[in-house]
Length: 248
Ligand SMILES: [Zn+2]
Image (cartoon, rainbow, N blue to C red; front, side):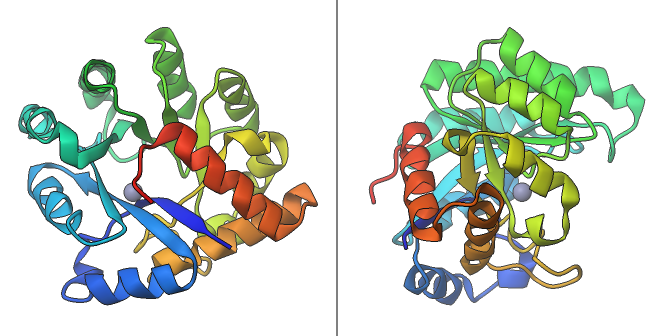
């Protein structure tokens, strides 16, 4: 069974000094590629460094609740177009940042969507308590190759987005999330991908998550779709390469 973790945070303090062993452990359990997502300038610089490890790719962005250095991050992405496989995570977070920031969040989000189009890169989207609004903007901007990571919105919004080609990456926390289980039941297999979001979103609350746990996600997708797990893994593997250009 071969899998791709399309969204994790190998730069997290939890993994400090152990990234290579975490990656090799993931690879020996079938996770052949991992996309580590930079959040802000310093973290994005680290993510770029980690992309020199075999099987690791970098996606660079800013968390919508901490937009301080978004201009620098946009410049960093432009300068490193050849070493970056996606723009993100970027998006909207109406939960962690107050209403007074929402307008600025939307403006910066559109800037990143335009950058992704300019550089012909896919987008990895963080949305929290703002899924419907993030999708509205993405459709309005006719964004292409879009992944909603750990989408927390209603399945009905996800289904509508999927009809427009938007993808949803499913974290191992699906094991304890009725919302994500419902989403997987309703969104077609062609629109699903795997992510760990490690060190966050472990199958059990409070645990440190690892990229190898995308296996938990694929098992849940297989169970909810009533399809053979090997076949599901292969379908999701193929979906990955419709979105990302990885040299696997
Ligand atoms: Zn993340």
